[in-house]
Length: 171
Image (cartoon, rainbow, N blue to C red; front, side, top):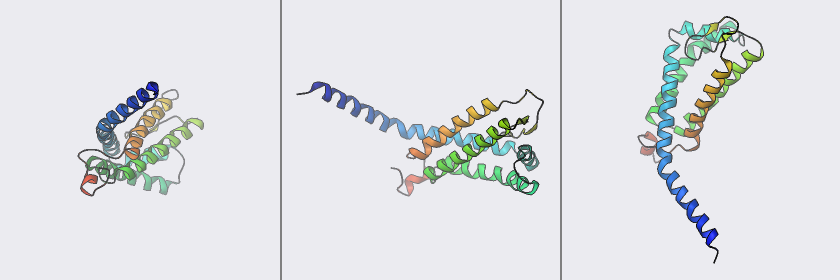
């Protein structure tokens, strides 16, 4: 009889039980944390002129498209936040939030690579800044953290206090 194999299997089984108990609460925290960030980001972009100014600073889009993005981005962020708070379509909203974070990371990396001196505008303060006042590395690291929260919600969507449960999803 192989007691080493039995011991390893028992340890793995215990770890799986612990994860099964912790995971829903970890997802709830990820959902609510990401919802808080998205809500704060959306509200800080109001009035929409601040958001438009932030998008224009990246010099990636035409004036008309920058204006459209600037006006609609806070609405998208609020919609995603609301869905995360109530736990509706958690897997899909987590994935959509993760894609949004990837777009933000790509935009910041693009500005950094092109030598632009701008504030990322993530929390309503976008636009030109003095040389040396950029924080691109920190902005990207922060957004990678938010991407991790989105990944938790997308990969392990089961959580308490979620409307998904009413519809029989992720029990």
